[in-house]
Image (cartoon, rainbow over all chains, first blue to last red; front, top):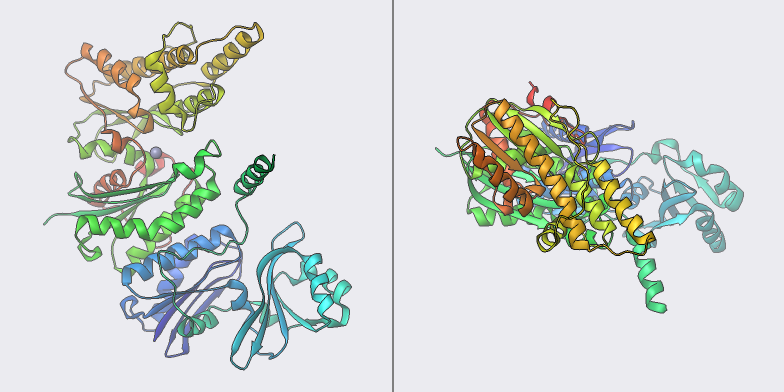
Length: 234
Length: 341
Ligand SMILES: [Zn+2]
């Protein structure tokens, strides 16, 4: 199975191709750039280096967020139209789950996260078991201090994976102390190659129905819903 | 052999795709409007628009090909709105277009949204140059002179608000539902233009426009009447406001048309659907029967992708090609588009 993987959901621009469960080529740009400019040339490059024609693709895997709204949409707009027009399945993977796969530590609680400004993060709680990755807590948008307090109650070691670790390092150690585990720095970078491999195994999604996982409502919509509720209760 | 161009348009709140044959015949034209989602906010919320586009894009493309009864392999080139517009919204169309172009080895063409509005008219009637286009919409009020295909010379533009913007703001002041433009147009037919609102003619030789003074005058008049305990009829305010906008648009367009001795005058953009503007233009241009006055059909006045495919056809013929690094260009100028390599 030939899989093309696309991740533009956060700072990393990641594109990879895999063949029969083996990564053929992987391109990672970990500099804040414009994904809209870089994505398609990266796809062209990775396929060329993999000796793969676009019509030989069997699947497209895409990171569906959470992350940058615009970034996620660039990835999804590209992946959806390619999959639809080539008439091949599309597989969408949580951007946080993808990051969680960077560690091979079994039976350990893993908290991958992306900074979401103003003290907030996108995170979830994962655990790798012999039969694959398990979701202990779904992806969410939460105040980091609140998240850490929740984790502390469970009194178990947690491994944090994030390129934004430095922003939250102090509060992590302050709240969790010895329970907080640090992964080697290489493990904090989301890998499109892993996305390609996951794409080969995971269940496909209906292409028209595939939407980004923003987690957050649009602010205007959230305010509107709040107003409706207030009117309703009066 | 016929030429088939696929057009994609996502610059604001319509997700649209279309296929146009030989630059002039609509084979398929699909528009998914989001107007119901934005109505409750009284205007387009960019993030909501972008979210809808990514949900709709493949659905709209599929419907387009079903309507056309051809496949993507029959397409000669893919044309997409590059700008101007809402950046997050444009990005969905641009990246979808790039995905299609790369997956099927098709040429990719970036199109200027306003060039699209002008070329909507070529789906009705062949152009004759020199040609003058009045583009009026929520974001634009421009007089554009075309000496040949693909040539766009802006001879007049708004110095503040676009005409459509003034319509929306006045509509809001009158508490009319969104979108306000058509509401005012409708009300104006029932009212009487009995309030003397200002006309911004600017300098004698200028083809520029200004609508912010008019907008303020309407708001002040309503405010003052309220303070004096008087009530003004909304329909009369609408009729008086519309009379001012339409008179300035008509007179300036007519003056430019005669000065540049054009063969055709095209009215394009969302406000081209305005009945008051149509009537006024038709009446005025009776004075110059040699000039061919064109309005796009109502369905092609608002944003659609057939107009992008029509403009894309000319760009394709003229050899313009975009690379796979094509980006959304939210403040794309028409002059830069005309001068692109
Ligand atoms: Zn428009």
